[in-house]
Image (cartoon, rainbow, N blue to C red):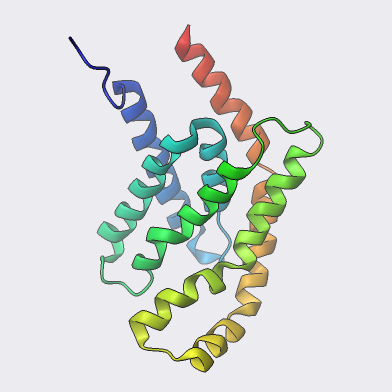
Length: 176
């Protein structure tokens, strides 16, 4: 008996390319503080590939570790921050009215950007030994950047539905 592989060769290549796309988009957007396509890409990949979307997400995180160094102060938080967005997206209804879906996706993407500092705070508290008041102060000082992050994520979220359609169309042509 032959067992079906966990991933086909095509899936392996696709997920590798998507992880590299996330990595390259992050590098290209580094000049703009907290403005990037990552949230939109995580949501899009999750809508199309569901649980397997974790593969390009964690490949992206691994590539960041290779590029910047694993002990870099934010790398550990990336191990769970993107999984939170993936999990929230997995909880969204699979079938949403076409007029509602883009708004919901943009809102989720924006909310993740706004809460980024809050999501990051437990990791920083552990790494830097912050107490509760220091952690709250760290969150407070970052609110302006979280607000920018939210605005950027809402704008990038406008790309989710078109990217989702493109990936679904590519997947359908693959299946033929």
